[in-house]
Length: 255
Image (cartoon, rainbow, N blue to C red):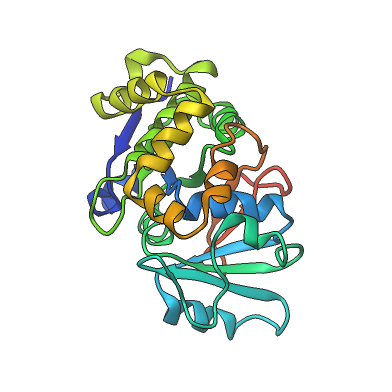
């Protein structure tokens, strides 16, 4: 069966090690990976994760006018000329569009992990669907759950999200004996706070959650905290645009 490990911050990603047949799953619960999952569920054609606003604008010049939307933040502030990455806001313009997404942490983590054998995006919204997909297709491969963190700092909500994902893996046949100490710690933390009410406390009490609440985004926290509400399986595919994330349940992939 698969071995499972957790990385606490994007700065701790060993990009070389990921190329050795690893399955990477990136978590940025507040907000990027939840935003990506939500955007695909709202009908976005794909999401292009980029490292910064400049790269986002470069990618946009390669796409037809009207086919994309620029979405992003830097250090918590919506980038000038971009839409806010708050998931509930995205419902207005996602259908059929390519979302070019730039965030301080999550999209950077995705780009750092892009050379893994296969790369997925995880959130509380899609834990069961994602774990089932991975267990069916990668039963013997090492899974690395990557917590994005925030500007070099550990994030409680990402650790919680990784723990939920690991709980879902265990329900799909992964053995607790195959968890590294970091994976075991994330799972045990999630088990202590696994109800949605307790999960809301974890998210809202985190540093980023407190910031979101102070800026009127409590409804987005409630949305993000819906454990297993979506069947979306966001998978990263290398393309001519450098890489796009699609819903694996909508397309045929060799993953």
